[in-house]
Amino acid sequence: MIVLIGGGSRSGKSRYALEYAERYGTPRTFIATAEAHDDEMRQRILVHQRDRGASWITREEPIELGSAIGSSDGGAIVVDCLTLWVSNLMFAGRDVRDEGERMLEAAVVHTGTIVLVTNEVGCGIVPDNELARRFRDLAGKLNQRAAAAAQEVWFMAFGCSLRLK
Image (cartoon, rainbow, N blue to C red; front, side, top):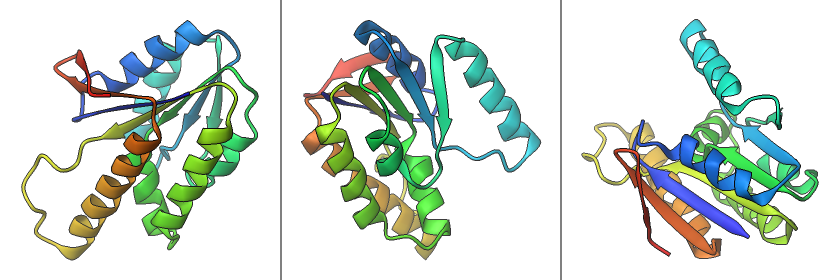
């Protein structure tokens, strides 16, 4: 089963994803797409790791998300987050559409529950530069494809969840 959880920054997406996945037994795998390029991000990552606790297997995979999902054993997987992954792919010169399709194909055949966390990027103003507009467009299209593949879609706002699908 694929579950998509989206919303704005600091809306409670990650917390909700972890709580959701914990209902589905073990093993529990957290696939992190963030990269620690500075001290502040390293601190954020440490807080997330502490909050998850020792019952989670953590895999750091900023690029090869489809392979990481495909090589994970059953149970529950939380991928946090798709929008950071899109950014990583763009800066690596990878094709976001193709990589997105590979990731979703791996998610569809996975035997466990996959919870994909993503940011809603379409509720703000139109970005003022081409790179930011391209990012918004690619992330938005990936979010739409992920929502179409998902059996459940949740939107988070102010720490509250709203089921959309």
